[in-house]
Image (cartoon, rainbow, N blue to C red; front, side, top):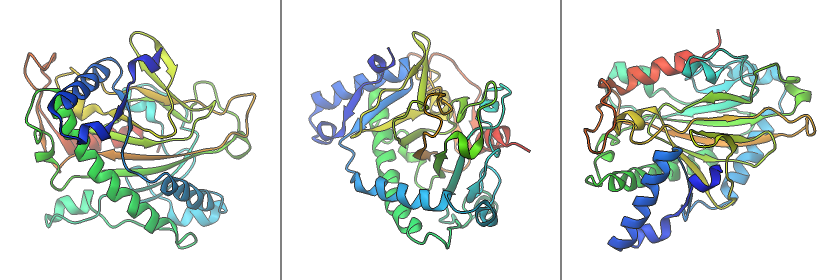
Length: 321
Protein backbone atom coordinates (compact mmCIF):
# COMPACT_ATOMS: atom_id res chain seq x y z
CA UNK A 1 0.00 0.00 0.00
CA UNK A 2 1.04 3.62 -0.47
CA UNK A 3 1.57 4.06 3.27
CA UNK A 4 4.36 1.47 3.23
CA UNK A 5 6.25 3.55 0.69
CA UNK A 6 5.73 6.92 2.41
CA UNK A 7 7.69 6.92 5.67
CA UNK A 8 7.29 9.37 8.52
CA UNK A 9 10.52 11.30 9.05
CA UNK A 10 10.92 13.10 12.36
CA UNK A 11 13.16 16.14 12.00
CA UNK A 12 13.91 16.15 15.73
CA UNK A 13 16.49 13.35 15.52
CA UNK A 14 17.79 14.79 12.25
CA UNK A 15 18.52 18.06 14.02
CA UNK A 16 20.39 16.26 16.78
CA UNK A 17 23.43 16.15 14.52
CA UNK A 18 24.29 12.54 15.33
CA UNK A 19 25.94 11.26 12.12
CA UNK A 20 24.58 7.71 12.36
CA UNK A 21 21.04 8.94 13.00
CA UNK A 22 21.22 11.44 10.14
CA UNK A 23 22.57 8.75 7.84
CA UNK A 24 19.69 6.42 8.68
CA UNK A 25 17.08 9.14 8.15
CA UNK A 26 18.66 10.19 4.86
CA UNK A 27 18.67 6.58 3.63
CA UNK A 28 14.95 6.22 4.43
CA UNK A 29 14.24 9.41 2.53
CA UNK A 30 16.24 8.21 -0.47
CA UNK A 31 14.33 4.93 -0.57
CA UNK A 32 10.92 6.64 -0.32
CA UNK A 33 11.68 9.20 -3.00
CA UNK A 34 12.75 6.46 -5.37
CA UNK A 35 9.47 4.59 -4.78
CA UNK A 36 6.81 7.30 -4.53
CA UNK A 37 8.31 10.78 -4.34
CA UNK A 38 6.53 11.44 -1.03
CA UNK A 39 7.42 11.75 2.66
CA UNK A 40 5.52 12.62 5.82
CA UNK A 41 7.53 15.01 7.99
CA UNK A 42 6.97 15.55 11.71
CA UNK A 43 9.00 17.60 14.17
CA UNK A 44 8.73 20.52 11.76
CA UNK A 45 8.00 23.05 14.50
CA UNK A 46 4.86 24.61 12.97
CA UNK A 47 2.31 25.39 15.67
CA UNK A 48 -0.85 23.49 14.61
CA UNK A 49 -2.95 26.49 15.61
CA UNK A 50 -1.45 28.52 12.78
CA UNK A 51 -2.77 26.42 9.85
CA UNK A 52 -6.13 26.23 11.63
CA UNK A 53 -6.32 30.01 11.86
CA UNK A 54 -5.31 30.35 8.20
CA UNK A 55 -8.09 27.95 7.22
CA UNK A 56 -10.63 30.01 9.14
CA UNK A 57 -9.52 33.18 7.34
CA UNK A 58 -9.41 31.41 3.97
CA UNK A 59 -12.94 30.06 4.38
CA UNK A 60 -14.13 33.57 5.24
CA UNK A 61 -12.75 34.73 1.89
CA UNK A 62 -13.96 31.82 -0.23
CA UNK A 63 -17.48 32.18 1.14
CA UNK A 64 -17.70 35.78 -0.03
CA UNK A 65 -20.01 36.47 -2.99
CA UNK A 66 -18.48 35.65 -6.36
CA UNK A 67 -18.84 39.28 -7.42
CA UNK A 68 -16.59 40.31 -4.53
CA UNK A 69 -13.98 37.65 -5.25
CA UNK A 70 -13.91 38.54 -8.94
CA UNK A 71 -12.21 41.85 -8.14
CA UNK A 72 -9.17 39.76 -7.12
CA UNK A 73 -9.28 37.37 -10.10
CA UNK A 74 -5.94 36.51 -11.72
CA UNK A 75 -4.58 34.01 -14.24
CA UNK A 76 -2.49 31.01 -13.21
CA UNK A 77 0.80 32.25 -11.80
CA UNK A 78 -0.77 35.51 -10.63
CA UNK A 79 -1.29 36.82 -7.12
CA UNK A 80 -4.91 36.68 -6.07
CA UNK A 81 -8.02 34.57 -6.66
CA UNK A 82 -8.14 31.66 -9.09
CA UNK A 83 -11.82 31.02 -9.59
CA UNK A 84 -13.60 27.85 -10.70
CA UNK A 85 -12.39 26.63 -14.07
CA UNK A 86 -9.05 28.48 -14.00
CA UNK A 87 -6.81 25.41 -13.91
CA UNK A 88 -6.67 21.88 -15.31
CA UNK A 89 -3.56 20.35 -13.79
CA UNK A 90 -3.69 17.15 -15.84
CA UNK A 91 -2.55 19.18 -18.87
CA UNK A 92 0.88 19.42 -17.20
CA UNK A 93 1.39 15.78 -18.15
CA UNK A 94 -0.34 16.12 -21.51
CA UNK A 95 -3.73 14.68 -20.56
CA UNK A 96 -6.91 16.55 -21.43
CA UNK A 97 -9.54 16.86 -18.71
CA UNK A 98 -12.30 19.19 -17.50
CA UNK A 99 -11.12 22.04 -15.26
CA UNK A 100 -10.23 21.28 -11.66
CA UNK A 101 -13.03 21.52 -9.09
CA UNK A 102 -11.50 24.09 -6.77
CA UNK A 103 -10.84 27.71 -6.05
CA UNK A 104 -7.48 29.06 -4.87
CA UNK A 105 -5.98 32.10 -3.26
CA UNK A 106 -2.41 32.40 -4.55
CA UNK A 107 0.62 34.39 -3.55
CA UNK A 108 4.29 34.09 -4.47
CA UNK A 109 7.78 35.46 -3.92
CA UNK A 110 7.82 39.25 -4.03
CA UNK A 111 11.17 40.49 -2.65
CA UNK A 112 12.84 42.01 -5.73
CA UNK A 113 16.23 40.88 -6.97
CA UNK A 114 17.07 44.20 -8.62
CA UNK A 115 17.00 42.62 -12.08
CA UNK A 116 14.04 44.33 -13.74
CA UNK A 117 13.12 41.55 -16.18
CA UNK A 118 13.26 38.88 -13.47
CA UNK A 119 11.33 40.95 -10.95
CA UNK A 120 8.59 41.82 -13.45
CA UNK A 121 7.91 38.14 -14.10
CA UNK A 122 8.67 36.38 -10.81
CA UNK A 123 8.77 38.88 -7.92
CA UNK A 124 5.68 41.04 -8.28
CA UNK A 125 3.84 42.38 -5.21
CA UNK A 126 1.17 40.17 -3.71
CA UNK A 127 -2.47 41.19 -3.39
CA UNK A 128 -4.59 40.58 -0.29
CA UNK A 129 -8.35 40.71 0.25
CA UNK A 130 -9.40 43.80 2.17
CA UNK A 131 -12.51 41.93 3.33
CA UNK A 132 -10.39 39.45 5.34
CA UNK A 133 -7.55 41.49 6.88
CA UNK A 134 -6.45 38.60 9.12
CA UNK A 135 -5.28 36.55 6.15
CA UNK A 136 -2.07 38.39 5.22
CA UNK A 137 -0.27 38.36 8.60
CA UNK A 138 -1.17 34.73 9.22
CA UNK A 139 0.10 33.64 5.82
CA UNK A 140 3.27 35.73 6.20
CA UNK A 141 4.07 33.94 9.46
CA UNK A 142 3.43 30.55 7.88
CA UNK A 143 5.51 31.31 4.80
CA UNK A 144 8.56 32.32 6.84
CA UNK A 145 8.46 28.86 8.40
CA UNK A 146 7.94 27.08 5.07
CA UNK A 147 10.88 28.91 3.49
CA UNK A 148 13.29 27.83 6.23
CA UNK A 149 11.89 24.32 6.40
CA UNK A 150 12.24 23.84 2.64
CA UNK A 151 15.94 24.64 2.76
CA UNK A 152 16.37 22.27 5.69
CA UNK A 153 14.72 19.53 3.65
CA UNK A 154 16.95 20.32 0.67
CA UNK A 155 19.96 19.82 2.92
CA UNK A 156 18.54 16.47 4.05
CA UNK A 157 18.01 15.49 0.41
CA UNK A 158 21.57 16.42 -0.54
CA UNK A 159 22.84 14.29 2.34
CA UNK A 160 20.67 11.40 1.14
CA UNK A 161 22.58 11.50 -2.15
CA UNK A 162 25.99 11.65 -0.47
CA UNK A 163 26.49 15.23 -1.64
CA UNK A 164 27.59 18.34 0.28
CA UNK A 165 24.69 19.68 2.37
CA UNK A 166 24.52 22.88 0.31
CA UNK A 167 24.37 21.14 -3.08
CA UNK A 168 20.80 22.38 -3.63
CA UNK A 169 20.61 25.33 -1.22
CA UNK A 170 23.48 27.10 -2.98
CA UNK A 171 20.78 27.66 -5.63
CA UNK A 172 18.14 28.97 -3.20
CA UNK A 173 19.68 32.22 -2.02
CA UNK A 174 16.83 34.24 -3.58
CA UNK A 175 14.37 31.61 -4.79
CA UNK A 176 10.95 31.83 -6.30
CA UNK A 177 8.14 30.03 -4.54
CA UNK A 178 4.38 29.83 -4.74
CA UNK A 179 1.70 29.35 -2.12
CA UNK A 180 -1.87 28.24 -2.72
CA UNK A 181 -4.79 28.09 -0.37
CA UNK A 182 -6.90 25.53 -2.20
CA UNK A 183 -10.60 25.40 -1.39
CA UNK A 184 -12.42 22.23 -2.39
CA UNK A 185 -16.12 22.93 -1.86
CA UNK A 186 -18.95 20.45 -2.11
CA UNK A 187 -21.11 19.83 -5.13
CA UNK A 188 -23.66 22.41 -4.02
CA UNK A 189 -21.08 25.08 -4.94
CA UNK A 190 -19.40 23.79 -8.10
CA UNK A 191 -21.88 21.16 -9.25
CA UNK A 192 -21.40 17.41 -9.65
CA UNK A 193 -18.14 16.29 -11.28
CA UNK A 194 -18.04 15.63 -14.99
CA UNK A 195 -16.54 12.38 -16.28
CA UNK A 196 -12.80 12.52 -15.69
CA UNK A 197 -13.04 15.62 -13.49
CA UNK A 198 -11.15 15.93 -10.21
CA UNK A 199 -10.63 18.50 -7.53
CA UNK A 200 -7.10 18.46 -8.93
CA UNK A 201 -6.32 16.27 -11.91
CA UNK A 202 -3.39 13.82 -12.01
CA UNK A 203 -0.06 15.62 -12.23
CA UNK A 204 3.36 16.12 -10.74
CA UNK A 205 4.45 19.42 -9.20
CA UNK A 206 6.95 21.53 -11.06
CA UNK A 207 9.60 22.72 -8.63
CA UNK A 208 11.98 21.20 -6.07
CA UNK A 209 9.93 20.33 -2.96
CA UNK A 210 6.27 20.88 -2.08
CA UNK A 211 5.10 21.16 1.54
CA UNK A 212 1.42 20.40 2.07
CA UNK A 213 -0.76 20.86 5.15
CA UNK A 214 -4.01 19.08 4.31
CA UNK A 215 -7.29 17.94 5.74
CA UNK A 216 -8.29 14.28 5.31
CA UNK A 217 -11.34 13.57 3.23
CA UNK A 218 -13.07 10.91 1.19
CA UNK A 219 -12.55 13.23 -1.77
CA UNK A 220 -8.92 13.70 -0.80
CA UNK A 221 -5.33 13.19 -1.89
CA UNK A 222 -4.23 10.09 -3.75
CA UNK A 223 -0.70 9.22 -4.84
CA UNK A 224 0.47 6.96 -7.65
CA UNK A 225 3.27 4.42 -7.51
CA UNK A 226 4.34 1.84 -10.06
CA UNK A 227 3.88 -0.88 -7.45
CA UNK A 228 0.36 -0.02 -6.27
CA UNK A 229 -1.20 2.36 -8.80
CA UNK A 230 -3.52 4.96 -7.25
CA UNK A 231 -3.91 4.73 -3.47
CA UNK A 232 -5.19 7.08 -0.78
CA UNK A 233 -2.28 9.06 0.60
CA UNK A 234 -1.37 8.28 4.21
CA UNK A 235 -2.37 10.95 6.69
CA UNK A 236 -0.87 12.00 10.02
CA UNK A 237 -2.39 15.10 11.66
CA UNK A 238 1.03 16.00 13.10
CA UNK A 239 2.82 15.72 9.77
CA UNK A 240 3.35 17.79 6.68
CA UNK A 241 3.10 15.88 3.42
CA UNK A 242 6.23 16.51 1.35
CA UNK A 243 6.77 15.58 -2.29
CA UNK A 244 9.42 16.39 -4.83
CA UNK A 245 8.66 18.06 -8.14
CA UNK A 246 9.87 17.83 -11.70
CA UNK A 247 12.95 20.00 -11.29
CA UNK A 248 14.27 17.87 -8.43
CA UNK A 249 13.55 14.67 -10.36
CA UNK A 250 15.49 16.02 -13.32
CA UNK A 251 18.29 17.19 -11.03
CA UNK A 252 18.69 13.66 -9.65
CA UNK A 253 18.63 12.10 -13.10
CA UNK A 254 15.32 10.42 -12.26
CA UNK A 255 16.78 8.60 -9.28
CA UNK A 256 13.87 10.20 -7.46
CA UNK A 257 10.43 10.32 -9.00
CA UNK A 258 8.33 13.44 -8.97
CA UNK A 259 5.39 12.55 -6.75
CA UNK A 260 2.41 11.97 -9.04
CA UNK A 261 -0.88 12.76 -7.31
CA UNK A 262 -4.49 13.87 -7.69
CA UNK A 263 -7.33 15.05 -5.46
CA UNK A 264 -10.59 13.14 -5.80
CA UNK A 265 -13.91 14.92 -6.37
CA UNK A 266 -16.49 15.01 -3.58
CA UNK A 267 -17.76 11.46 -3.09
CA UNK A 268 -21.34 10.57 -3.99
CA UNK A 269 -22.08 9.60 -0.38
CA UNK A 270 -20.67 12.89 1.00
CA UNK A 271 -21.35 15.50 -1.68
CA UNK A 272 -21.12 18.41 0.79
CA UNK A 273 -17.55 17.55 1.87
CA UNK A 274 -15.44 20.73 1.96
CA UNK A 275 -11.66 20.86 2.46
CA UNK A 276 -8.94 23.51 2.55
CA UNK A 277 -5.28 22.73 1.79
CA UNK A 278 -2.19 24.89 2.37
CA UNK A 279 0.33 24.20 -0.39
CA UNK A 280 3.83 25.69 -0.49
CA UNK A 281 5.79 25.15 -3.72
CA UNK A 282 9.54 25.70 -3.30
CA UNK A 283 11.65 26.35 -6.37
CA UNK A 284 15.14 27.83 -6.78
CA UNK A 285 16.91 30.99 -7.86
CA UNK A 286 15.62 32.37 -11.18
CA UNK A 287 17.22 30.81 -14.24
CA UNK A 288 19.16 28.15 -12.39
CA UNK A 289 20.69 25.63 -14.78
CA UNK A 290 19.27 22.27 -13.71
CA UNK A 291 21.58 19.52 -14.90
CA UNK A 292 21.12 15.83 -14.12
CA UNK A 293 23.53 14.29 -11.65
CA UNK A 294 25.63 11.62 -13.36
CA UNK A 295 25.68 7.92 -12.54
CA UNK A 296 25.84 6.25 -10.12
CA UNK A 297 23.42 8.76 -8.54
CA UNK A 298 21.47 9.58 -11.67
CA UNK A 299 19.68 7.02 -13.83
CA UNK A 300 18.74 9.20 -16.85
CA UNK A 301 20.77 12.05 -18.33
CA UNK A 302 18.23 14.77 -19.18
CA UNK A 303 19.16 17.74 -21.27
CA UNK A 304 19.91 20.69 -18.94
CA UNK A 305 17.03 23.12 -18.53
CA UNK A 306 16.65 26.70 -17.42
CA UNK A 307 14.59 26.28 -14.25
CA UNK A 308 12.24 29.19 -14.87
CA UNK A 309 11.74 28.64 -18.57
CA UNK A 310 10.62 25.18 -17.51
CA UNK A 311 8.36 26.51 -14.75
CA UNK A 312 6.71 29.06 -17.01
CA UNK A 313 5.90 26.42 -19.63
CA UNK A 314 4.25 24.23 -16.98
CA UNK A 315 2.17 27.12 -15.58
CA UNK A 316 1.04 27.98 -19.09
CA UNK A 317 0.11 24.35 -19.74
CA UNK A 318 -2.37 24.13 -16.85
CA UNK A 319 -4.04 27.46 -17.58
CA UNK A 320 -7.56 27.17 -18.91
CA UNK A 321 -8.23 29.88 -21.54
